[in-house]
Image 1 (tube, helix red, strand yellow):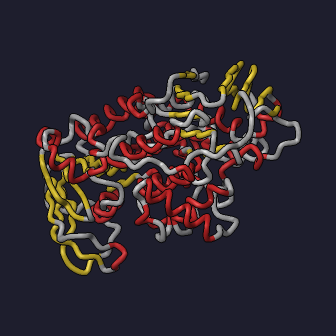
Image 2 (tube, one colour):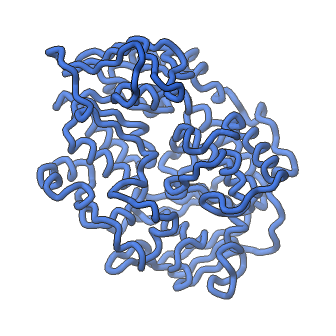
Image 3 (cartoon, one colour):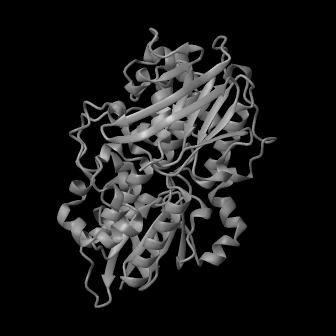
Length: 486
């Protein structure tokens, strides 16, 4: 059993400074949730606890019951913003590589990424969390949800004394969320691991935590028991003020920010008997799907059911689109259209896109890259494009990030920037693959209102992917559910 003491630490470097004189104790046998808005300082405080900050004064200590300090090697800190490094991913990885059958043989096998000896010692854990069936797959073929489960497994396999997990439930289907929750609870109660979770939404607060630490502005603004936090409306309103917004109080989008006219076509997407396979592994089989212009769809299914693969065909990222009967915007694939002509109609976000968007550029330029449909910025936006990008950032309440480096803002702040990028070119087909995960409660509410406002236009076609039923926009009235084949 261990306990944590934080007594007004002051960082040696200004870039790691907290916003207040933080004092906090997490006692022996206590597990805690750190909750607060995106960019509020949760991850930074976790970095202090993990020993990643050099101090010039104050104290941060994680102590065993006998008074000795827990070694840094026994404090595991898991952040999904570093997901692209799993399995020794190299710098030459790129967004579409997952779909290139001739280029992915260098991706490691899951069991090799975990270590074969470690796998042998941890089969009970791997089976409990649902990773065992993935062991002989290549990492590059895993869905974002499968990778998250894999990374949690890898952290627990290290047998840490303290485990810090940033947003453990995002990207997971309902069954996987419950499994991960049970595994974390079991680790805390049966093995004595001190579990610290960083979350941005009260609905992710598990029942087994002892202490809720409210973080805002780089400071601890409240410490309370779970039941006290859930009944404290004032604290929630302070942490997530945007939750009070309504469709009536949110300013209407002006005409120049509504969908542009992108020509005449009856159907945005028509798929007939679509099949996608890599060697002996079949991802999709006999998929028939017609999406009429202006229709609003939810694309549903468990982690690994092929949702992202299906969308890769629509967005022109998967070369197997040419081997299938697919018509987009009234034109059959493979009849001379370029990938850029396809993408010009589409505004798109996905966990994979975020994973590979590792550009050290200003957030306003990340938003402006939506004009060019690139993952990164390879053309310089002009003044008018940057001005429009800033206008969209104001609409999504993230204008304060405009001139900050994308790589130096929090994961949740990156998410709202990536979501804003979807709308900058005013697309008529909006494809949102788990667009709200990682956003705090207020930003989720705001983003959903913005999506509903934009997609109320009868010309806009929407495809929305989520594992949370309450996140589905009100306009959605059609559903396609994929079944996991493997």
